[in-house]
Image (cartoon, rainbow, N blue to C red; front, side):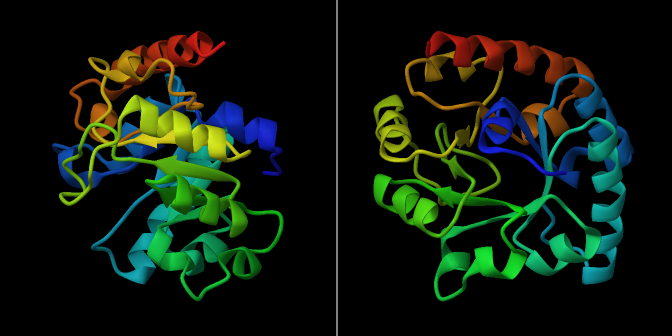
Length: 219
């Protein structure tokens, strides 16, 4: 999938990050399909405990799902899995760009997302070749215990400091998403607000509508 920066900006609207912690007997592809079919605009597979082979096999399945829904698909952290499965790109943290040229590793045509939580790290991510920045944690998060929270003013400063799309992440739910109005973000990235829900499809539809409202409010 070849995507422009405008395509990526639009794809930030409802960015789904997988988590198998709350599947409750369902398979990850089942939940992912419900999420993609009901409004998710971007998909990241995030795995911390799988072997390389199992991670690659899972990524290949999710890549095909995303392609059917014409949604960009990236792999969290593992450049190797991203390249081997033919993902649209990779998402990495600040530590991953220290001493490594991720952009050179994946080539000019793959999507590169980089996490940031300050103006300085956001600017560094853009300089490192990022196509978009994931900024958080905005409300705290259960997936990263040491993440500090960011205010709307913090988000606004980061959005103003870079030219590339910005997606907010961290503890975002249907109950608090609209409090991000005025931040300038291009959308929200969510984990438990989709994958921990009893009806992930309904959750995706509601979050997509709210994210559309959020972004429209920025003008």
